Length: 379
Image 1 (tube, rainbow, N blue to C red):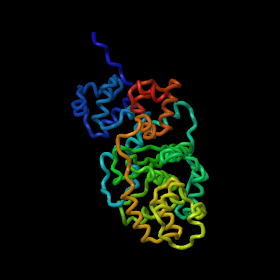
Image 2 (tube, rainbow, N blue to C red; image 1 turned 180 degrees about the vertical axis):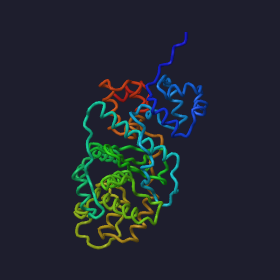
Image 3 (cartoon, rainbow, N blue to C red; image 1 turned 90 degrees about the vertical axis):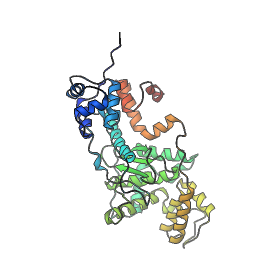
Image 4 (cartoon, helix red, strand yellow; image 1 turned 135 degrees about the vertical axis):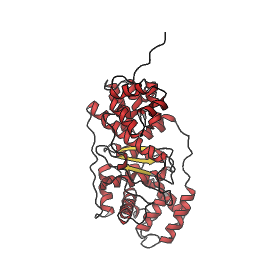
């Protein structure tokens, strides 16, 4: 006698929203999912529910992550995010891969909010604000003080990835969700931000060099402080407002990571008050002390009048060519998983699961894991 399939707890309103947002009729959706149209209609009315395998097939057909079917309400319009940090000379239209990662980030933010609401935990508030009329140094001082990003706090760090972890966790402790996007060409986007509250989002491209990711973290946080998530669209040159924001975010990020007052105290820099062609060893050593890329450091020299525009441009080109992004597919799966999803989402869902607010199937769906994967996460 066949064992009946266990029904999912997907919400009918989410099933209908996902189908309609995919611009599919009930008949076409049913055909692609391999079920009868009557079954889809019953699922959307709440008179029946799809099994877990059927729900996974619907997620594939609708091109939505499984987790959206468990959200309390349909996610907000993803078009709210228009811009993202890009490298120069990139394609003007976003790729399907980037669009999918933006949707995923919105989904995960909704998951974090619901998990905290289910457990009654207080959501930390990101309260740093900034205005374009302020000096970058003033805003950078505010960010470092509020988020604990003082360079002196990284004095005993052992390697680049530990420094990256500490900077991510500093943001998470102050109400910012930090995600890592994958499968997106770095030439298209180095990162983006979503300025919804609570839990605004900073997303960083895992394909970028880890030193560059440090700067993207700081850059996107400045967007959140301005109240304009992701408003840096370098492919859309000529928009003076966006160019102004981009320049401001870069200046604040650089001053946050390498404060001018700190840099001028470095033994190699102390007493220098004119443009200098710095040797590669000095650039490498000082950049390593602040856990930033060599390009960021030379840019700080330029901003402080300690090198020339010609020297900066030459070194920037050389460093970008030499700084090779990490190889894909490496590392421990669970470490990579935790970095991609962020500590807040994973811990929030697991707390709700342990408190009995989510079933094992619901928690696994939220975290895009198999049920037995929850045991590994819990450990």
